[in-house]
Image (cartoon, rainbow, N blue to C red; front, side, top):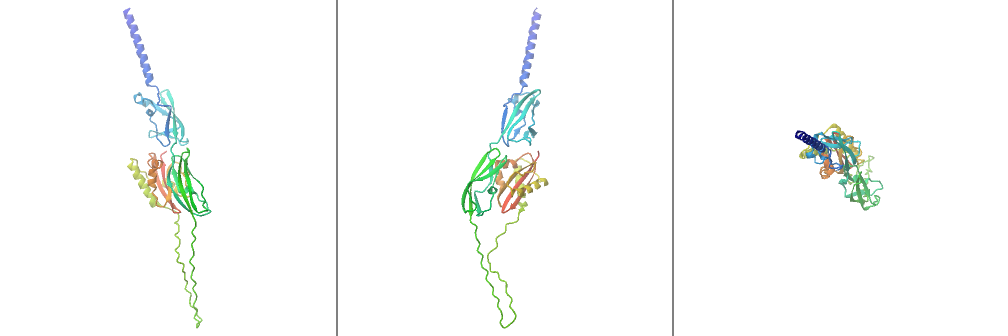
Length: 342
């Protein structure tokens, strides 16, 4: 009887321990998330490390068996990169999977950052004229999203005077940056022509021969300097490549080679933005930073001081670059094209 009772007790203990082990195994292999929704700012790196999404990931056993499954992203260098056919801002889906278990996660990308002006003329002088002038050519702004520049306010280019206008840079997420600029419309200066003295001919009355008349030009006014023909300034663009590569190296990044493909893209876009200043024409697979301003302006300093431009110069996923400076109408239109690896 006692032997039978002992066997029953041992059996109950075994059943209890097996049940306890099953419960513990089940608890340590469930998927417990920190949150169902993770929010990232546009341009911020999105982690592909599954432990960043699990609660108490350090104590989770078999962490390597947990996987991220998604159609909205692809994995590059342990980062989630949004597929090109999908808009970056918005909600994107992924699943955390462990064996037969799965939990859905929403990655929410928001854009709350306003554009930054990289070229801004606080004072603009325009000759009085009835011709239309695209004032947006005097300004440039950058952002990770598409930027549109508008000029608002009352001004009259046919009437001399000072006009204060609002220059507004708006990105596709409706974030705005606004600054004021003064347009000075001045009267066209009239140049008075210096009369040319007439040279009278002297005739010898005692001879049939006529003395020759010397041709005399008494106009002492200097000719107006001509605007140089449009041209590429390779001497300047080469210095941008050197400076950007040195900047990347100082920040622990690889230097980028200049390829024929990237150079063709940069030259095409530099000439293009001299007549239509926009990011609209950027080639597939390329990123770019652009600028325009007076001859001699230092774009590198402006780009370093702009978070979005700076991020583009220091981007990891870049395999080549090229720079081009197009000098047109006494201005520099500058672009650096970056070839991405995806």
